[in-house]
Image (cartoon, rainbow, N blue to C red; front, side, top):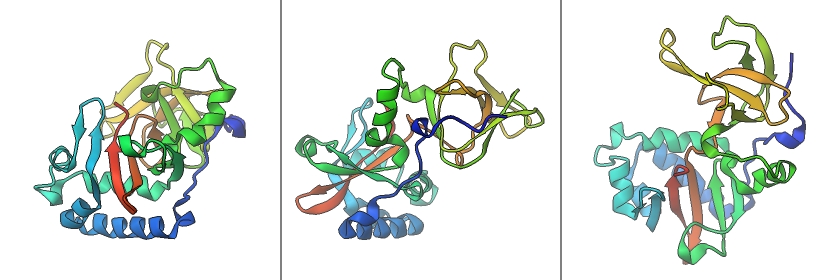
Length: 232
């Protein structure tokens, strides 16, 4: 059984928010806002030009409100999604996402979408196309990989913090298990090809590179949420 690839092809959990006491306080307040589903306080934490979608061209507070249906806060999906990625931890990055902050530092949740953390892996694999829709990261230890898309199948490996690619060259690389709540299976391989097999998608174990990022930046001396968007 394989236990994953070398450390150079892994991304380990990290949270740098405590490096800046003002940022840390902002994040702690944001956690309370999320827990209480407090739309008024969340609104005040958003930058005026917050980005909700690059591909869809959704900018500004009103666009954010409409995207997440915050007129009905109790049923909005934004709270659970924000909590999930903030709990994962984040990192400081060079460059912001707005025109006025492109040369400034920003903070990005979750760490799994960090350019900084991926850069050493890019350098080791200059010819590999890290397609965000086909790249995933194990965010837990000992995530099982199966020989077939069935939990009764034998293991071919257990992975911990590995960067994986979906093998879209394989004719069958995706299946939905209708007997198990329509859960999704993906045929994946580690970057060094040491482990290949089926992995069951679980939000507590896997994060796609194309999933949401939450960006926090200093705007006129105050931290604001400047982006909450998927790769699009």
